[in-house]
Image (cartoon, rainbow, N blue to C red; front, side, top):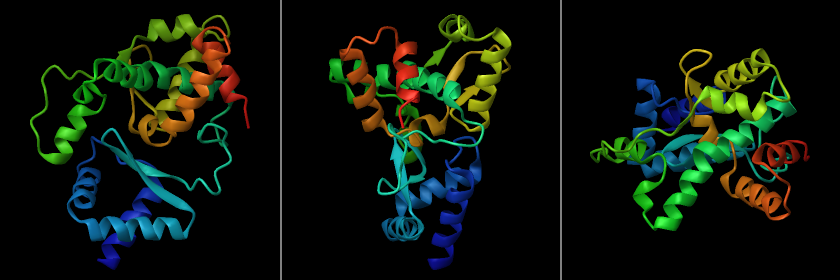
Length: 217
């Protein structure tokens, strides 16, 4: 148990999020779901070094504990993730995660939430064939950010987000879909509160709200 918990904790700290397409990562997820003692041991090991295990809409990963987290809306900072990447990340989170959640809330249909297929995989249920992964066309992303950045710049920003598993995309101009990090490494409660707050203040288009949010902290 101790060795397995240590191995999983080290894996999570190394990769950040479990990849739904990696069989080894899927086995880790199944083990955590099936064994509450193992799950508790992994959480304890992560907490000892200032991290916490997160799961959201069927995706699993780690995030810095709230007690030491400095980003205003729970976004990762530093490295090659700069303010313009965060603006795009926030906009994509609204398109691919938040709007789906809001639609499900309005319809009072919990099964309509994004990630239903992944939850079916997690818990052994049959996935609904109508459950298609939400996507945003590259042209739509370019329309939102093209006035500020060149097409090459937009492609470069998406490349960085793909590298960090925030999005998935086939080729440089294919449809953009949410990656596991978009569900796990972005704090959904803090993000929703911030984005809704900006919208209520009348900040304008979502891309403008995203810019304001990315520049906080």
